[in-house]
Image 1 (cartoon, rainbow, N blue to C red):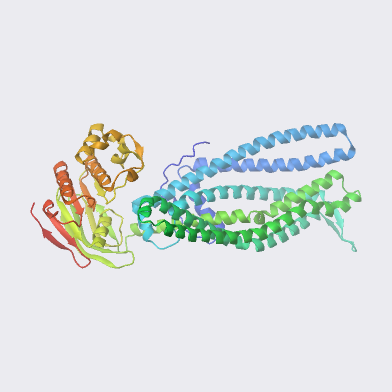
Image 2: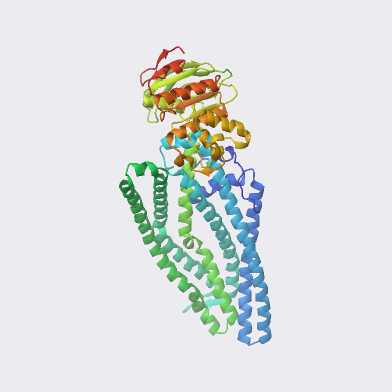
Length: 591
């Protein structure tokens, strides 16, 4: 069982579940159910069954050890050398089997934890990134901040803790039923002082009373731990997210000399971590103090209670020690809730954060697929035109940006879009399928070649320059000659010797060079429609005109939409759209 690599999970496998965080058990079922019914359910169920059987083996070894301890103390009481040697042999067998079972159990448990994490991570990433959901999520209210931390960290914590808690719970339940029977049979009969009442198996109810009082007091002391743990994990995630933002914007912060402000912000975020840490420490302090006293008394209490029976000769030394150990096993099983309150709190907090993100993502998908309601529909057309019908754009708060906008662009036309930056930016996102807020319909051209969106700062993923140019396709799909020619036409032929060099290109190159790489990508991919958003603002007027003329020469049949606020570009386009928050105006210009 070593293939913990995750296969893509179909969205429907999780979509049948209605998210609710009413109880911890409900959270577990919401996250384990789809995994148990996914395309890899056979492996998941087999691993779970094997884990259950190995847990049964661990419990059996524990019961065997309990009877072995009885036999050992009996032969010690009899001072039998032969009996001691026999028990040493039996213990050797128990020792070897215990190591084998525990080792196998660890491997299966860790495989199941990793496989569940891999499946859940892959599923949530697919849902988060589907249809631009990761972008729209930032405009959606709700408890889904720091989605990267929820996916990377909280899924790990939840899956590891849930499997571990499930194992200890099953182990405790099995031990409970088995050691009740053992303790009942060996604790004998106790006479209640001053009465003629005789109580058989008297140590069993004592174990229940001891565990019940311990659990009750433990839950009362540890109750604040759940809230404190949840708050601490949220504060930690916010702190990590703030630091990652500083790392991503290091150049801008350094140029603006913003380090003092960023240090102050980091200090504020970390002070929140400190406050929540102290709250959790106080909650832990009471729980640990109680747990220490509870655990210290546990081995001694059953011996003191059963000592009168041994002194009267009603039980042997071996039975006394067996009863004491069975009492400990039984109370430990009954004390599972209080023993695991910290881990339960940690697991529940992570499950809540994962489900919050999943709930927000599913809500966005439901809104996108809903037949009712007002939203912008982006679909593929059967014609080779870009058609926009009665488009109304609003921002996430409901403010109107553009009303009743219609547009029909033929294949190969070039359109300059200018005016209000907020409106042009929202139109860019609408055609890209990222902006559902509003109404109307956008019909994308059906011609082969697809669409390509070129932003002000093109995305240059970390990797080789060849991978950057071919993104989002594999470099193997493009011949070396085509790659080099695209660099030459875009004016960055000097980068050709570095095609296989791997570095952070967005940090190495100037903005103008980055924009030229963006155009080299356009020339390499040769899309049917290119939509640019201030993609030439790093150039001077002459350089900008040369780039646009080069695109027209190299891609004569490609439709070009160009958002730009620089003057003197109208003559390079078939028409100019001036967009404002009132109504768009169209001004035709001749080539």
